[in-house]
Length: 102
Image 1 (cartoon, one colour):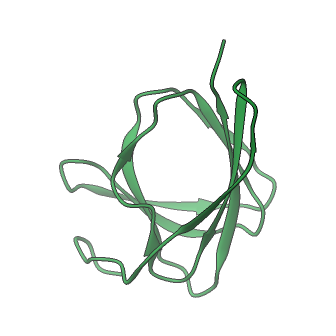
Image 2 (image 1 turned 45 degrees about the horizontal axis):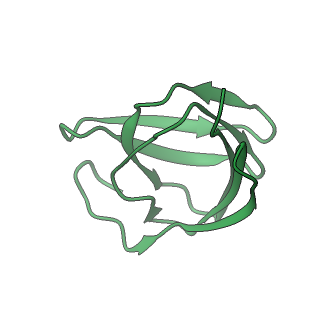
């Protein structure tokens, strides 16, 4: 997908756990799918299931390529605002864990 292009579909989230302390969401991204611009309300971590190639778009429109490797977890603080777009040729899946309480 070229910089600034619009994705063709929405990524599909499935909430697997939401117990008031932790929310676990599995995300499925078809090629070209995106989350849409959003702000993370809580600290979170991501565990890639399949791995994949993504573009992360910031609110100002700048983009950064990102490759997820299967099982290579990473964490981010609350307040991150971005859109995540699957720029790979295959469906990508990752699990996002949000920490609703400290």
